[in-house]
Length: 320
Image (cartoon, rainbow, N blue to C red; front, top):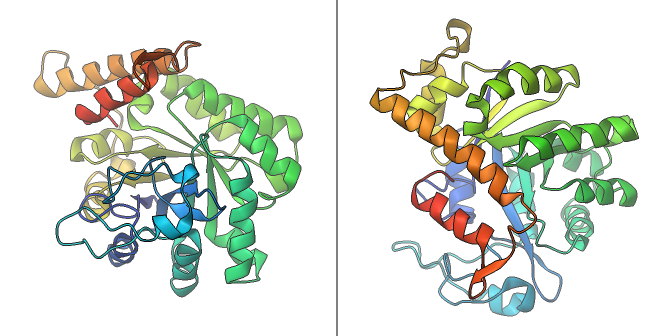
């Protein structure tokens, strides 16, 4: 198995995320796939941005779904040295793919969007190049919930495309596999699951989930993996691709830790490495329970839901 290196938000580690510069640098770094995020403007233009709002990366604060494209494209990047950069539209990125066909694009579509964004995205693919087989070879749909998978099948927009479930939850990944089995249609088959890298460290994952996914020919991807030691753990497992902020370093780490010579070995509990390893496993189990509980979206501080506060904390400790 040739392990794929997937640039997270193109090349988030060193360049402004989800910008054309980051796409170009990811290509130079030799990524196999560029992962990027879709949002849709008030007037129905599909744009490239991770958050539902613009303040973290851009010079004004808008809610994208409530803002027209004319205002969004006037934004400028907040990163020093890159203030001339603009928010790309999906059309711009699709043109980039046509110009750079050696790379695939993984479209991470957050469930906060209107599902119409899938129809708009395919329409924009065909507006850039009226060649559906080309796009089926170059686009991977990244979906978070089964109802989006169902919508893609019912509308036909994901027919013969690669489809990957992105989730923190192993149970959600299983639901995707079960739905794919239920419809039993080769044109709408789940091709992979993309999971938090810590989830792969658990005994449950290694003894139950891996055989289950292999039985149904579902590839395993992990995100977002940046530390050399984490590549050592994960590359001992049958991982098809690594989503990373640092593609060059990731390629070096994958080469360093040859999976043909590795077995998965947990560190000693009382070691520094072991403290981090087992702490992260505990955090993962807790997060999986909390974020998928019925009250996860309950507002606890102003407009901040419980799940959003948990996510902010996890980012602060570099878990996400």
